[in-house]
Image (cartoon, rainbow, N blue to C red):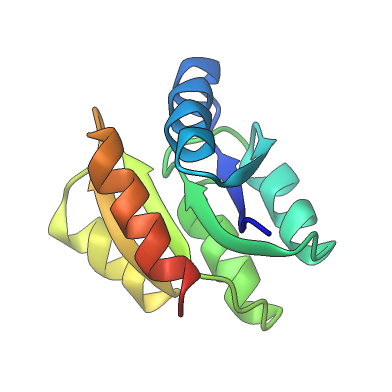
Length: 121
């Protein structure tokens, strides 16, 4: 049985690239377009092992989604995938429970390796 990864990103292209990399590595992939939808899917507990999440999205950012997960005691490892690389933003994400940070454009093998590591926790 393969692990399920939830990809939360408002870019259809990025979701497609992440889905391709992860499905080729044997993962099942769920998608959410915005942070609120991602939060709802995490709350539904669809067996998600890892969440790959963008930072900058409309209505609810990835960091706001992390904060809501922490407040609701939803313990799922989250890997941030973003164009942002500021140390303060990375620190804030880690404060709310992010387990990793990958800057776009990403290398598929590094993404798969990070997801693999987090899905075994």
